[in-house]
Length: 148
Image (cartoon, rainbow, N blue to C red; front, side, top):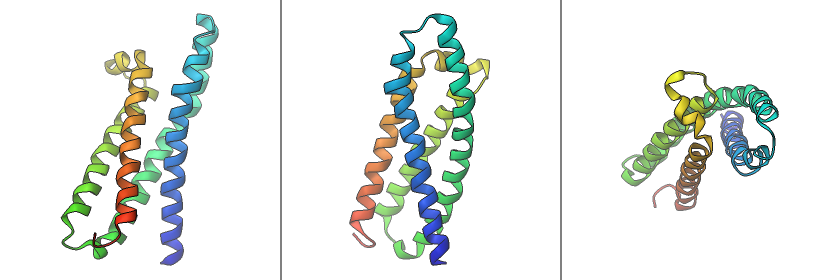
């Protein structure tokens, strides 16, 4: 089990780093830089980047869900009766689902969410803020330990 625990933790943290880092790159580097391009080259760049980023988003969501469920199931025995732990992990999960939804919308094609895609910078900021809250909760829970 030790090897699987390490692999799952690595997959979870590595995927989160990739997803949050990629989102920050899009928000703080690519979007501002692409504003300097004319419409046609900007549109071509956006299409190419989002076509590749979409794969990272979908695979990342899958890996985060699988490793997150596994890690939580492994942690439950050490946190029986620990309401603060379960409440904070529940909060992390809800925030993660919000991030998964926004990230999926931003790489998706549904006409219903075109307004969100047209305001990409705003929604990427929301994702970054929520991800920082999740990291802060995770850091607190890790340092707090098993019983608080």
